[in-house]
Amino acid sequence: MRKNKKLILVIFFGMQLVFMSQLKHYPEFVEQFYSNGLYVFLSKLMRYVFGWLPFSIGDVFYTLAGIYIIRWFIVNRKRIFKDTINWLLDIGATISIAYLAFHLLWAFNYYRQPLYKSLDLEADYTTEQLLSFTERLIQKSNSLHYELSKNDTVKVRFPYSKTEIFDKVKDGYQTLSDIYPHLEYHPKSIKKSIYSVPLTYMGFSGYLNPFTNEAQVNGLISTYKFPTTSCHEAAHQLGYAAENEANFIGSLAAIHNEDIYFKYSGYTFALRYCLAEIYKREPQRYETMLPTINKGIIKNYQEVQEFWKSYENPLEPYFEKTFDNFLKANNQADGMKSYSYVVALLVNYYERKEL
Image 1 (cartoon, one colour):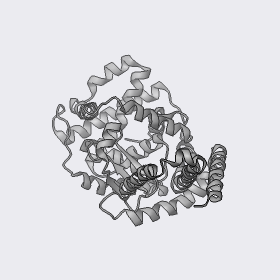
Image 2: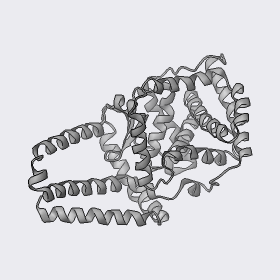
Image 3: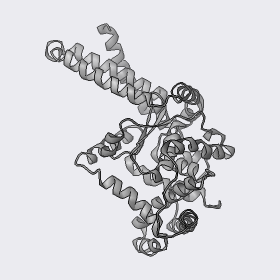
Image 4: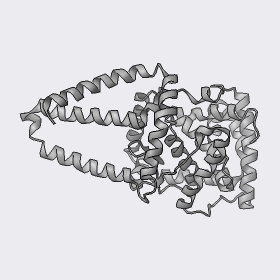
């Protein structure tokens, strides 16, 4: 690539940054013309193209890109000092192209209208609402747990393979789409990541590849967590970039699935977040509520906790901090704290609905 073209791309990158800083002020525009317009076409196109493949083409792409970048640095290492400006232009031009593709193919969704506005929900809730909703969740979760285990002290074991769970994800979204047509999930493109081991050490259950629109799920996590994690990543595919919104939609998709194991995973997922919020607001009520939950449910929670604890390492906090900064840089002011905001959406959604 000629030097002047590289310079144009670098200048264009600066223009993109300015554009993004202003785009956050126009969420309705993004919602109408990108999230519910261009993105719907692009995402379905990529899922049709890559979804049928039994492996993650996105992970293969990342592998090849990583090899190419390492090779490029080795081959061009002498240019760092001999031709520094041109070397920097190479990097800047590449970043400019990647940044454009990242946003055009998915990341403009970070700037869309908040979900609570689309669903006409309140954005906050009282402690009394939280306590009432959590008590209902405990009753529902206990009922489902006992129906599956026939013993309130035994954890639920899922009878499905992880591939079978992937196949069932679309069923919950199909039910949801009867209420909210924009949540129709077709075609499916959910796969186990070939980087499951690194993802585990980094502390991540999955991610969406924005360049291929493949939902990547960590293949090492507990089968109990597979339904909600898969539904969460599918929500990202549908254009809900914010983690709190993907958690909310993912839990609804699991809860609305006709399969009782999905329902159990969805309800206990929601319960865990509510309990965490009660612990912050009313520690004493948390202590009195905890014994009312079936011991088998607690064992499922412990199963997940022990899995992640077994992979703890000194680098994990740095990966989490990096992701936190990434979210903040992409219009998510609360960073990873936004995960807890799913409770507000759940409490208000079920304020007048049966569980």
